[in-house]
Each structure stands twice: as structure tokens, then as C-alpha cells.
Length: 379
Ligand SMILES: [Zn+2]
Ligand SMILES: [Zn+2]
Ligand SMILES: [Zn+2]
Image (cartoon, rainbow, N blue to C red; front, top):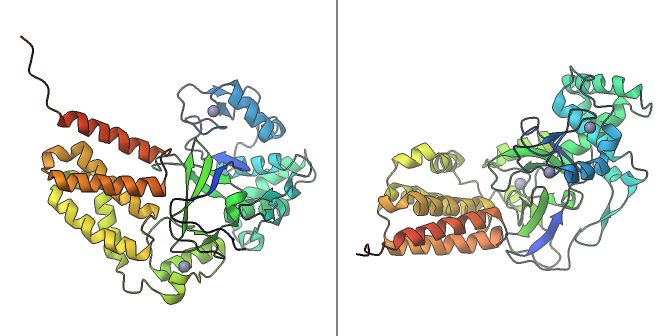
């Protein structure tokens, strides 16, 4: 797969991708709507199954259409009491989605004009069959459901599980602080992995995924995303990718081992120090700047300049500076330059519509206001 287009950092490659299948995490259930995944304190419970929670009738109707109509009676509260709930919701929704005739073979058009169908996605089913407790959990659901739908077999449900495990994304909330669900997106499932990705994805408007270029993508080159979030050495990355996705990574970074000189323990230490609010609260601004200046060049050597991991580090620094920084004696010029740099990075990595950029602007507004002294009291 290649593209005749050429992308530069900040270009949108895929926009408003909607999940083909989505399931909330059990932790997010009852706090977030099962349809739009938005956090809501006043959710209504589906009176058919007492398992699904929605913002309103509109969300309920949409989810009904997307598959709940097929699972509502079967999934009802009384049954499946001893089931692994996360697995149950995931398998049921996959089964329910595929109940619509022909949907498994319905082609989905990808950004480069090629097509893909659910039934052609990789499942690595035989590998998952070796996991005895997973097979047991799955069999519990299959035995019950097959009484109602004889087409349900252990093999079919293990294939469904495998497809989700291999292709689905962990959905995070917009500011990325929370794992809220699992989503299978057809369009992004075409993107291959690179340990130095040229494209990055994030969520907007609840469950819509956007993919943007964060590195230069030349004509004929395919954009790659990263399947893993955390910082790891080549050995650790390869091990994790093999375990989770069944391939040995041969991306340019792994092939040339361009990061062989990077001390990942130190990178991890720097990053965790700068993320932890308690530690940060104890440090002086100068000390924070020292750690930041040590971390950024390393990050920019292992990722592209506009990779979300680099941009997020700038945003953290700008947030500290703008919200708690006034008593940290930050020189005006230094603050202005940090703000300029952060804004430029946020606009390219996430764009002006993303929650990160909006939050940055709110903090900036507060900073400007508090910087203006109050006028003298009128007599
Ligand atoms: Zn909703
Ligand atoms: Zn229901
Ligand atoms: Zn790699």
C-alpha cells in the first residue's frame, strides 16, 4: 500500500472515522454513555436488559440501530452472571454488529482508495486458542448463546476476539487521561506500525478518530502509526509487538537501531518525574527547565518533532508555567517563547479543534488576565 499524496506534519490523513464496533470499559460503564462515550451523571438505563446506559433517547436509538437491538434480550441482566463482563460485552457487540446481513463483507474505502472488509482482518486466532482461561471464559458465553443462535461457535467467537485484539484501538478521552473503551475502526486498521511513526491518532467528539501526519511522508511512502504508547528499548518493543500483534518489528528505527545509544531508563525517569504533579510541585522552575531541556532532545531524536509524545511534554511545561508558574519566577521572555513553541506544536500535532489546544488557550487567557494589574479603586 502506498500513497501518491505527500503529507507534511499537520496534514489530516483521515478525519471523523467512526468505530465499526465500540465497547466501553467496565470501569467507564454507568459513568459514560454506551453510545457516545461522553461522561454524564444522568444516564438512563435500558429497561430491556438493564446493561446499557445512555444520555437520552437519541443515543439509545442510535445504539439500538448499531447493534443493541440484536443483543438486548440475550444480554439481559439475569443471564451471564459468572461471565467475564468485558469479554462478554465485546463478543456480544461484535456478534450483534455482524448480524446485519452482508456487513462482514461490506467494503470500506480507505484513504488511499483501496478497500477492506471486516472478514478479511487478521485474527491470529490459533495463538489465542492457546490461552486456556480466555478459551474457558469464551466457551461459557458460547455455550449459552448457541442455544439461542446455533451459528455461534467457539471458533467463531475466538475469531471475533482475535480480530478485536489485533485491530481495535484503546479509546481514550479527549485529554487522554483515561482509557474509556475499545474501538474497531476500519479505516485506521490499514495503518502499519513504526517505532518512529510519521502519523498519530487521537479522539475528538467522543469516539471519532482523527489521524494526522506528524512527520514528513514522501510520495510513495505509507504513513505509519505507533501501536504502542510507552517508551521502550528496541528489545522491549519487539517483544511487546510480537506478543500482542504477532510480528517482529523491522521499521527503519528497529532495522538501523538508530536509538541504540539511548538510555531508556533515564528517558523514563525524566518523563515520569515531569508527569507526576507531586514531584513537579516540589521542584523549582529552573529544575523543571533543566529536566525538560534534557528530555526534549532525546525525544526528538527517537520521534519526529511533532510526535504527540514531544508535543505533550511542551504542553505540560506550558501548563505548569501558565497555571502555577507566576510564583516560580519565570522570566517573561522565557515564558513567551515556551508559549509560542507549545502553540505551534499543538496546532500541528492536534489541530485547533482538539481539547488540548482549547485547554491551552483557556490557560493562556487566564494568564493574560492575571498579568494585567487591577485598576485603582474609584473614589
Ligand atoms: Zn450519549
Ligand atoms: Zn437493552
Ligand atoms: Zn520498530
